Length: 572
Image 1 (spheres, rainbow, N blue to C red):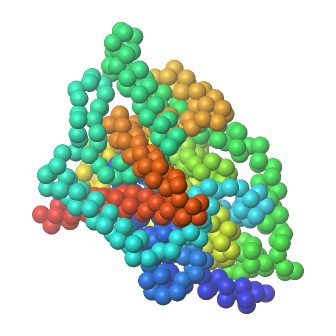
Image 2: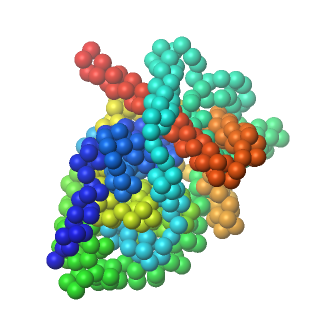
């Protein structure tokens, strides 16, 4: 039977006020994440930001434990990666002219199917990765340490709301009133979109990612734009249009190669251990005599009942994909089976590197299914979307489990919180995606457009045809080799693929962080170690809160403008 003390423990951590705060935060973070992923082609992990905000608001309502805050931020951040999974795949269908066949209902089915698969998979694999393998999961560990170090108070709130408000006002001036330009210092360089993107949000992405990763990102941009496009065309090796096709194909190859290398280097050698670990958990290892150990059962309190519940959920997902997406039954079953494999891959990647190449996993499954099943081109985007959502949610769940493991949070409370946030995030992300395409039209998505949608553009190109196969093959080989050598090939590929102005602006954000860190280090060099560490922790928290607030403020205003446009169009 279930342990009464265990029941009290998880119920004391998954509280009513925590659910309310988490759901409100989930709506905001999910909406801003969908907008950010489409607008910038990047999506920073929201976990640390959600942890700080959760603790702040809980403390406003009275005493709050770190475990309650941990569960609350689990709810709050869950929808972000669901939004990422949709944003990184579905717009590709719009780019190929399928906008009339991809509506709110289809996106909701994709989001629900991916969320359900991600939740079931992580309930099965969480013990292996968190307890047995004890992987690092750097973002989850960072969230736990942030909660421990943070004494959230008025200063945190002022920083958060001030940065959100200023960024929101600036976005209104730029996007709604046209009082400030969207691009600064633009230069007419053939084939290169040179300039500074007048977006505090883009600067914040560079600030949050920072360091070596952005340096490689910018190196890729320099290589593609000034090496291949400018120098290559000037030397007469190819025309500018051909150079742009080469760059696009090379960038896709680098990102795909890096994703395949993650699988080959970090996951395949661990598959036997993963299978053994999952099998041990499913057999009740570590549970009490009737297999109902609280560490294993995350839903009902009984492992056998959980297994039956998961079987029903998976069967319902297969039916949902057949009826809601028009996929053949065999293809739907294969997608579900491969989704379980790729969520384990996603967990392994996040645990070792902090990177979740969710759209790459979606592409892998898309290509495998298309090789044997008669599936329409449009339906391939649905397949990629389901897998990407499942893998994105898995990455978020496993990071949250890691934070909970460090803080002693009950995993059952976390999983139930993730389920609440994931389902809510599925609805919000589908609604935001629909509002954006209705407001701006399908032609606004793609490289050089209003919403760059870099990852979805890669999916669209893989489905429709690669501009330069030799460049893609070179990028594929280079991506594998670079990742194998321990270098951030994914970031290099992102720089090659994205428009130059976006990479340049992100690099300026990272440079700003570098300057601030150097100045702070110089000013605190002579202070006692304890005081210096305290100031560093406060500065780190301030940077995360302000940059995340800026990112959220501009994103939310963008979503609001889109929704107002849709409403105005409906009432006109």
